[in-house]
Image 1 (tube, rainbow, N blue to C red):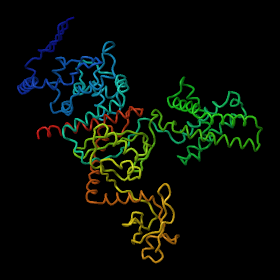
Image 2: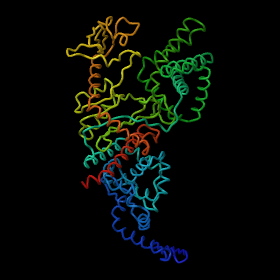
Image 3: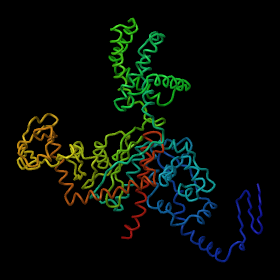
Image 4: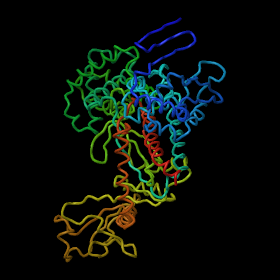
Length: 606
């Protein structure tokens, strides 16, 4: 095939042997022509880094697609990519072939099957999503198709087809969250080798990550739980009792009331809902579920939990069956029938509490949960925890949990992760007041790091002395703000709690500021061990060293702000907990890679 197109003095010629483009000299001004000559002359020097994205070596157990840098793409990249571009710098600071080596074990195409995209290629595609804060992989693919420098960064020529979103999805599922964590740990080790981690001070905190799905209202959660309980009641029956026209509205009312009772424990407003309105909504939900052959994903999850309940709680199931059969055998409006209805409702409430964790908090994302952040703001999604080293703000530890997870126990988990992955811990750890909990002190006891925690204020009646003014003297006695020892009135009990009472309150000059008007003497109920530990931490956090470290901890809030503003740190792009843990890894990878690109030249020059 031969094709020739002429544009004035320029022409394009396509033959079976190749493509020739001829651009006439007179199209360029002398200045433009000189600049073009300079750029092409420098191209030979730049061929090294221009070819970097296209270097994917064969690995044992896997074969990669060969994507070469063709001449046409080379010319376009030479002319359009600036050597000082951010992506050019990021590409040169690490050996991306290491990702191919670490991921080769999950591929099984060494001898047969189609060649796969090199893992580093797909990883860099996903990394662009975090680097530039894109919300969807579909928009990522469109951007790569149109952005020249993005094509080059991923390792695609100008004429190369870009992988579809399905390929990226299969890649995430194939590697799994653990492999992405392994790659992140490898980058942290590269930062450590570059001297960017000081291991003197670390700071840990959580940031909220909002789900990309729609949060369920408490009303909708009641309806979903009522449907689950109705399915449980149907499972108790052999098909004859529940189908009776007389019992059907009674059982419907029971499951609605049981669902209201269970969820009103978490949402007080649920108790005011109308049973009639809930019953109508339950009818509409039944119709929507019936339209799907297998039902929606959330319903499949609830059915699995129901099956697990049937296998695990056989005694409870038999008890429920007996209650249902007794109810069917009794005549209406009798005391025994009312007692059976009450017992069956209590049983359904017990089952409902067991099924509540499987009731989704958001349509589409079954892993997302509603939780409260430290500022009191509610969020539906996840919490991403960063352990940040103070020297260059490198993220050395990462944790991703549902938003309703208690934060205090997670400190020990992230500390263990860092110790196991990197082999060491910072000498000092700074935490905010959300972690001023007894469990944190107990979990970190024996760890080779000194902990500084912002002291949490203990609530008391307005206008009277707070618990922090009650301290222990040299012989271990609890003393009031005036310094007088208090009497141990009750305890200490097994949970270390005890009640102390003032001895000289009647004649004390500070009585008006210390003793409530309705009490003859000041009483203080405390966890003795916890109060002593809290006082020690309060004194440490108010010391010069403590103030310095906690002040630095506040400065590290910028890491969260940077990650949230530029790298999707506060938005979950996927609708699955494991996949969103991968997104958190990519966010931390993007932050650390930028740190490495910024500091490594300075460190090497030094």
